[in-house]
Image: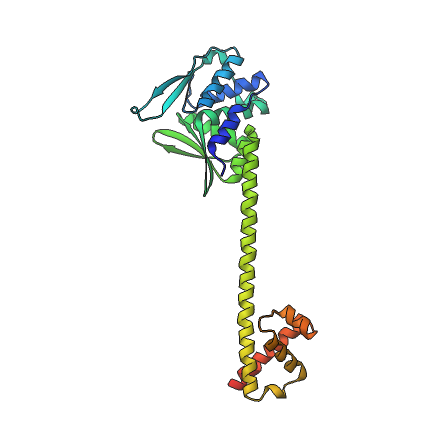
Length: 280
Protein backbone atom coordinates (compact mmCIF):
# COMPACT_ATOMS: atom_id res chain seq x y z
CA UNK A 1 0.00 0.00 0.00
CA UNK A 2 1.19 3.53 -0.81
CA UNK A 3 2.52 5.49 2.18
CA UNK A 4 1.93 9.15 2.88
CA UNK A 5 5.63 9.67 3.53
CA UNK A 6 6.45 8.42 0.05
CA UNK A 7 4.14 10.97 -1.54
CA UNK A 8 5.49 13.85 0.55
CA UNK A 9 9.01 12.69 -0.25
CA UNK A 10 8.21 12.82 -3.96
CA UNK A 11 6.83 16.35 -3.58
CA UNK A 12 9.86 17.48 -1.55
CA UNK A 13 12.19 16.28 -4.32
CA UNK A 14 10.53 18.47 -6.95
CA UNK A 15 12.81 21.41 -7.82
CA UNK A 16 10.88 24.12 -9.68
CA UNK A 17 12.87 25.56 -12.55
CA UNK A 18 11.26 29.00 -12.40
CA UNK A 19 12.07 31.47 -9.67
CA UNK A 20 8.40 32.49 -9.45
CA UNK A 21 7.43 28.87 -8.71
CA UNK A 22 10.13 28.52 -6.05
CA UNK A 23 8.90 31.70 -4.42
CA UNK A 24 5.28 30.54 -4.49
CA UNK A 25 6.22 27.19 -2.93
CA UNK A 26 8.17 28.88 -0.15
CA UNK A 27 5.19 31.14 0.59
CA UNK A 28 3.03 28.01 0.69
CA UNK A 29 5.40 26.40 3.19
CA UNK A 30 4.90 29.37 5.50
CA UNK A 31 1.14 29.62 4.91
CA UNK A 32 0.20 27.30 7.74
CA UNK A 33 2.12 29.24 10.39
CA UNK A 34 0.92 32.62 9.17
CA UNK A 35 4.37 34.05 9.94
CA UNK A 36 8.03 33.67 9.04
CA UNK A 37 8.72 30.30 10.68
CA UNK A 38 8.17 26.80 9.39
CA UNK A 39 7.88 24.10 12.03
CA UNK A 40 7.99 20.54 10.80
CA UNK A 41 8.86 17.02 11.90
CA UNK A 42 10.05 16.15 8.41
CA UNK A 43 13.72 16.72 7.55
CA UNK A 44 13.02 16.68 3.81
CA UNK A 45 10.51 19.51 4.18
CA UNK A 46 12.98 21.56 6.23
CA UNK A 47 15.68 21.03 3.58
CA UNK A 48 13.21 22.09 0.90
CA UNK A 49 12.51 25.37 2.69
CA UNK A 50 16.24 26.11 3.05
CA UNK A 51 16.94 25.18 -0.57
CA UNK A 52 14.11 27.34 -1.91
CA UNK A 53 15.13 30.37 0.17
CA UNK A 54 18.80 30.00 -0.75
CA UNK A 55 18.02 29.71 -4.46
CA UNK A 56 16.06 32.98 -4.22
CA UNK A 57 18.87 34.66 -2.21
CA UNK A 58 16.53 35.11 0.74
CA UNK A 59 18.06 35.02 4.18
CA UNK A 60 17.20 31.86 6.06
CA UNK A 61 18.32 30.37 9.35
CA UNK A 62 19.49 26.78 9.40
CA UNK A 63 16.92 24.34 10.83
CA UNK A 64 16.92 24.17 14.61
CA UNK A 65 15.55 21.23 16.56
CA UNK A 66 13.28 21.73 19.54
CA UNK A 67 11.22 19.22 21.51
CA UNK A 68 7.73 19.71 22.85
CA UNK A 69 6.05 18.05 25.81
CA UNK A 70 9.09 16.32 27.24
CA UNK A 71 11.99 14.22 26.02
CA UNK A 72 9.78 11.49 24.51
CA UNK A 73 8.16 13.91 22.08
CA UNK A 74 9.52 13.96 18.55
CA UNK A 75 11.73 16.97 17.89
CA UNK A 76 10.37 19.71 15.66
CA UNK A 77 12.60 21.44 13.13
CA UNK A 78 12.17 25.20 12.92
CA UNK A 79 13.24 27.12 9.81
CA UNK A 80 13.05 30.92 9.95
CA UNK A 81 12.75 32.80 6.67
CA UNK A 82 13.01 36.56 6.16
CA UNK A 83 9.39 36.91 5.06
CA UNK A 84 9.78 40.57 4.08
CA UNK A 85 12.28 39.59 1.40
CA UNK A 86 9.66 37.40 -0.27
CA UNK A 87 7.65 40.46 -1.19
CA UNK A 88 3.94 40.63 -1.91
CA UNK A 89 2.26 37.64 -3.55
CA UNK A 90 -1.36 37.32 -4.54
CA UNK A 91 -3.17 34.14 -5.55
CA UNK A 92 -5.46 36.05 -7.87
CA UNK A 93 -2.51 37.40 -9.87
CA UNK A 94 -0.48 34.17 -9.87
CA UNK A 95 -0.19 31.99 -12.98
CA UNK A 96 -1.23 28.33 -12.88
CA UNK A 97 2.33 27.08 -12.26
CA UNK A 98 2.70 29.33 -9.20
CA UNK A 99 -0.63 28.21 -7.81
CA UNK A 100 0.40 24.55 -8.06
CA UNK A 101 3.71 25.31 -6.40
CA UNK A 102 1.97 27.22 -3.60
CA UNK A 103 -0.33 24.26 -2.88
CA UNK A 104 2.63 21.89 -2.90
CA UNK A 105 4.31 24.08 -0.29
CA UNK A 106 1.16 24.13 1.87
CA UNK A 107 0.92 20.35 1.80
CA UNK A 108 4.60 19.92 2.70
CA UNK A 109 4.47 22.51 5.47
CA UNK A 110 1.02 21.97 6.96
CA UNK A 111 -0.41 18.80 5.47
CA UNK A 112 -0.50 15.11 6.13
CA UNK A 113 -1.41 12.19 3.89
CA UNK A 114 -2.61 8.78 5.03
CA UNK A 115 -3.66 5.70 3.11
CA UNK A 116 -5.75 3.15 4.95
CA UNK A 117 -8.07 0.30 4.10
CA UNK A 118 -10.98 2.75 4.18
CA UNK A 119 -9.32 5.00 1.61
CA UNK A 120 -6.90 7.94 1.32
CA UNK A 121 -7.15 11.02 3.53
CA UNK A 122 -5.43 14.41 3.30
CA UNK A 123 -5.43 17.08 6.00
CA UNK A 124 -4.07 20.62 6.21
CA UNK A 125 -3.70 21.77 9.83
CA UNK A 126 -3.65 25.57 9.93
CA UNK A 127 -3.26 28.05 12.77
CA UNK A 128 -6.00 30.48 11.80
CA UNK A 129 -9.53 30.21 10.49
CA UNK A 130 -8.72 32.75 7.76
CA UNK A 131 -5.85 30.60 6.46
CA UNK A 132 -8.08 27.52 6.42
CA UNK A 133 -10.96 29.27 4.68
CA UNK A 134 -8.62 30.81 2.13
CA UNK A 135 -7.06 27.45 1.34
CA UNK A 136 -10.45 25.79 0.93
CA UNK A 137 -11.58 28.51 -1.49
CA UNK A 138 -8.37 28.22 -3.50
CA UNK A 139 -8.75 24.47 -3.77
CA UNK A 140 -12.33 24.90 -4.96
CA UNK A 141 -11.14 27.28 -7.68
CA UNK A 142 -8.99 24.46 -9.02
CA UNK A 143 -11.84 21.96 -8.93
CA UNK A 144 -10.85 20.20 -5.70
CA UNK A 145 -13.58 19.95 -3.06
CA UNK A 146 -12.48 20.07 0.57
CA UNK A 147 -14.14 20.07 3.96
CA UNK A 148 -13.46 22.30 6.95
CA UNK A 149 -13.42 21.41 10.63
CA UNK A 150 -11.77 22.38 13.91
CA UNK A 151 -9.64 20.16 16.12
CA UNK A 152 -7.72 20.97 19.32
CA UNK A 153 -7.59 24.70 18.63
CA UNK A 154 -6.56 24.34 15.00
CA UNK A 155 -8.55 24.74 11.81
CA UNK A 156 -8.34 21.71 9.52
CA UNK A 157 -9.02 21.51 5.80
CA UNK A 158 -9.50 17.90 4.78
CA UNK A 159 -10.04 15.85 1.64
CA UNK A 160 -11.61 12.41 1.44
CA UNK A 161 -12.30 10.35 -1.62
CA UNK A 162 -9.89 9.01 -4.20
CA UNK A 163 -10.99 11.32 -7.02
CA UNK A 164 -10.39 14.50 -5.02
CA UNK A 165 -7.01 13.38 -3.71
CA UNK A 166 -5.82 12.17 -7.12
CA UNK A 167 -6.80 15.58 -8.53
CA UNK A 168 -4.92 17.37 -5.75
CA UNK A 169 -1.74 15.29 -6.08
CA UNK A 170 -1.86 15.68 -9.84
CA UNK A 171 -1.95 19.47 -9.49
CA UNK A 172 1.04 19.36 -7.15
CA UNK A 173 3.12 17.17 -9.44
CA UNK A 174 3.08 13.90 -7.47
CA UNK A 175 2.92 11.85 -10.67
CA UNK A 176 4.23 8.64 -9.13
CA UNK A 177 1.74 8.89 -6.28
CA UNK A 178 -1.10 9.45 -8.74
CA UNK A 179 0.01 6.42 -10.77
CA UNK A 180 0.14 4.24 -7.66
CA UNK A 181 -3.34 5.36 -6.58
CA UNK A 182 -4.80 4.78 -10.04
CA UNK A 183 -3.17 1.34 -10.16
CA UNK A 184 -4.69 0.49 -6.79
CA UNK A 185 -8.06 1.77 -7.97
CA UNK A 186 -7.94 -0.39 -11.10
CA UNK A 187 -6.95 -3.41 -9.00
CA UNK A 188 -9.86 -2.85 -6.62
CA UNK A 189 -12.27 -2.41 -9.54
CA UNK A 190 -11.07 -5.63 -11.17
CA UNK A 191 -11.36 -7.58 -7.92
CA UNK A 192 -14.83 -6.15 -7.33
CA UNK A 193 -15.93 -7.06 -10.85
CA UNK A 194 -14.55 -10.59 -10.53
CA UNK A 195 -16.32 -11.03 -7.19
CA UNK A 196 -19.60 -9.86 -8.69
CA UNK A 197 -19.22 -12.26 -11.59
CA UNK A 198 -18.38 -15.14 -9.25
CA UNK A 199 -21.34 -14.33 -7.02
CA UNK A 200 -23.64 -14.14 -10.03
CA UNK A 201 -22.31 -17.42 -11.37
CA UNK A 202 -22.77 -19.06 -7.98
CA UNK A 203 -26.33 -17.76 -7.78
CA UNK A 204 -27.09 -19.00 -11.30
CA UNK A 205 -25.63 -22.39 -10.46
CA UNK A 206 -27.75 -22.57 -7.32
CA UNK A 207 -30.90 -21.76 -9.28
CA UNK A 208 -30.00 -24.38 -11.91
CA UNK A 209 -29.46 -27.07 -9.28
CA UNK A 210 -32.71 -26.28 -7.46
CA UNK A 211 -34.68 -26.25 -10.72
CA UNK A 212 -33.13 -29.57 -11.81
CA UNK A 213 -34.06 -31.13 -8.45
CA UNK A 214 -37.69 -30.03 -8.86
CA UNK A 215 -37.77 -31.41 -12.39
CA UNK A 216 -36.29 -34.78 -11.39
CA UNK A 217 -38.75 -35.11 -8.50
CA UNK A 218 -41.61 -34.32 -10.90
CA UNK A 219 -40.39 -36.84 -13.46
CA UNK A 220 -40.12 -39.57 -10.80
CA UNK A 221 -43.68 -38.81 -9.60
CA UNK A 222 -45.05 -38.95 -13.13
CA UNK A 223 -43.37 -42.30 -13.67
CA UNK A 224 -44.69 -43.78 -10.40
CA UNK A 225 -48.21 -42.70 -11.30
CA UNK A 226 -47.93 -44.14 -14.80
CA UNK A 227 -48.45 -40.76 -16.39
CA UNK A 228 -44.99 -40.41 -17.95
CA UNK A 229 -45.51 -43.16 -20.50
CA UNK A 230 -48.71 -41.49 -21.79
CA UNK A 231 -47.06 -38.09 -22.41
CA UNK A 232 -46.11 -36.77 -25.83
CA UNK A 233 -42.83 -37.99 -27.35
CA UNK A 234 -41.25 -34.54 -26.91
CA UNK A 235 -42.00 -34.50 -23.16
CA UNK A 236 -40.78 -38.08 -22.70
CA UNK A 237 -37.59 -37.26 -24.61
CA UNK A 238 -36.93 -34.19 -22.46
CA UNK A 239 -37.62 -36.14 -19.25
CA UNK A 240 -35.21 -38.88 -20.32
CA UNK A 241 -32.51 -36.30 -21.17
CA UNK A 242 -32.94 -34.56 -17.82
CA UNK A 243 -32.42 -37.88 -16.03
CA UNK A 244 -29.37 -38.56 -18.17
CA UNK A 245 -27.97 -35.07 -17.50
CA UNK A 246 -29.14 -34.13 -13.96
CA UNK A 247 -26.64 -31.29 -13.53
CA UNK A 248 -26.90 -29.73 -16.99
CA UNK A 249 -28.20 -26.22 -17.53
CA UNK A 250 -30.85 -25.31 -20.09
CA UNK A 251 -28.33 -24.57 -22.84
CA UNK A 252 -26.70 -27.98 -22.50
CA UNK A 253 -30.07 -29.75 -22.42
CA UNK A 254 -31.32 -27.83 -25.46
CA UNK A 255 -28.19 -28.77 -27.39
CA UNK A 256 -28.55 -32.44 -26.41
CA UNK A 257 -32.25 -32.57 -27.36
CA UNK A 258 -31.75 -30.52 -30.51
CA UNK A 259 -34.27 -27.75 -29.78
CA UNK A 260 -34.12 -24.17 -28.60
CA UNK A 261 -33.46 -23.15 -25.00
CA UNK A 262 -36.96 -21.73 -24.63
CA UNK A 263 -38.50 -24.97 -25.99
CA UNK A 264 -36.67 -27.17 -23.51
CA UNK A 265 -37.53 -24.75 -20.70
CA UNK A 266 -41.21 -24.89 -21.65
CA UNK A 267 -41.18 -28.72 -21.66
CA UNK A 268 -39.55 -28.91 -18.23
CA UNK A 269 -42.07 -26.45 -16.78
CA UNK A 270 -44.87 -28.56 -18.27
CA UNK A 271 -43.51 -31.72 -16.62
CA UNK A 272 -43.47 -29.96 -13.22
CA UNK A 273 -47.03 -28.66 -13.75
CA UNK A 274 -48.34 -32.13 -14.69
CA UNK A 275 -46.75 -33.63 -11.59
CA UNK A 276 -48.44 -30.99 -9.40
CA UNK A 277 -51.80 -31.59 -11.07
CA UNK A 278 -51.49 -35.30 -10.47
CA UNK A 279 -50.54 -34.70 -6.85
CA UNK A 280 -53.54 -32.42 -6.41
